[in-house]
Image 1 (cartoon, rainbow, N blue to C red):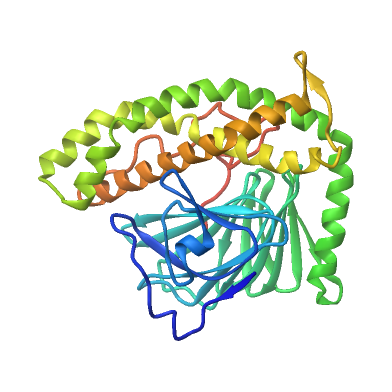
Image 2 (image 1 turned 135 degrees about the vertical axis):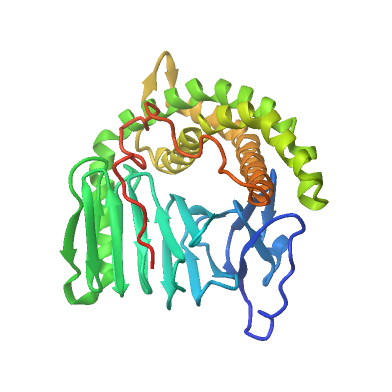
Amino acid sequence: MKRFLGSAMLATIVAVVGAQEVGILSYAEGDVKIVREGLMLTSDGVGLGGALVVSDVIQTGVDAFAEIALTGADVATATLRIDENSAYYLEIHDRTSGTDTRIRLLHGSVRVAVEGLPRGRRLSVQTPTAVLGVRGTEFDVLLSPDEATLLGVREGTVELSAAGGNVRADAGNAVEALASGAPVVAGVPGGDFQAYYDDWRELRRRIFRNGAPVFVAAYARRYDDLLPTFETAFDDLIRFRDDLEQLAKTPGSTADDIQIKMAMGPALTRMRSVQPLFENVVYRLRDLRRYHEEGIGVTSFDGVDSGTFFTRFELEETLVLSKLSVVRHIFSLYNQIDRRGFGDMPGGALPEGLERPFGGGAPPSMGEPPTL
C-alpha cells in the first residue's frame, strides 16, 4: 500500500520526547519498519509526518521503500530514499565548527539528494567498506552480499574513502570499493544508472554465489562468538537507562551529569568494543539469509548445517535487533548529557584489532568526510 505525505502535512511534525529529531517519514510503501528504543514500529505506527530520531533503524522488506526528509535548522533540502531489502540509521555528532550527520547503511541501497549544505555541515554515508563525503549532490549507494560498495553520482561530487585509497567522483560516474584494493572509477554509459546498477548487482551476485558458503560459515561463527560478549555488555549497560532518561528529560546539576558519566564509563566502553562489529554481523546475516532461502550458501560447519543455524538466528533476531536499538538509544542519551558538559563518548571508534570476518570495515586509514 502506498502512503504519501503532501506538502501541506509536512508542517505537522510530531516530536519524540527526549530524543534528537533527525528527519520525518515523508513516504512509505510496502513493509517499512522502524526499530526504536527496543520497539519494532510499522510506518503506520510512526505515521507520515512522524518524527524520526537519532539511531532509529529504518528497514524495508521485499518491494518496499521509504523516503525521509532530513530536518534541522542547519540542514538544506535533503531527502533519503531507502530501497527494498535495506536498512540504515542516522547519527548526529556535534563539532565546534558545525555538525556531522552520518548515514550508516547496514545493507541494501539508499539514494541521497542534497541541494546544498551550510558551511561547516558534514553529511556522509558509511558502509562496511567505504565512507562517502557529500557535497551538494544526488547519488546512490549500493551494497552487495559480498560487501562491495557501489557509488553512483547523478549530480554534483562525492568523495569516497576506502581501505585502498580516496577518490572523487563527479556526475555521470560510478565508483566500486571492495574490502581490499583501490576504488575503481568508471563512467556510466549513456547516464543509464539503473541499467548499470542492474548489471553490477548481477555480477556481484555471481561472484558471491561462488563464495557464499564461506561467507555464511564465517558470519555464523562470528555471531556465535560475539553474542555472549554482547549480552554481557548489554546487561552492564542497561542498568543506566532509567537514570539517563531521567537526566535527559529533567536536567540535574553538572555534578549529576559527571557522576553518571563516570559510573557508566566502563560499561559504555565495553559495549563500544563489541557493538559496531556485532551489529555488522547481525545485518550481514539478515542479508545472507535471503540468499540462503534461494539455496545460495547452503553449507555445514562445526557439526551444524546452515539451515539449522538460520532457524535459530530467526528466533533470536527480533530480540537481538531490539537490544541493539536500546544500545543506540543509550548512546544517544549519553551524548545529550555529554553536550551539556564537555568531552566525547569514550571508545567512539572501533578498537584496533577488531576486524570484520573478511577485513576492511571503516579502517583507520579512511579519511574524514570533507568539511563544506
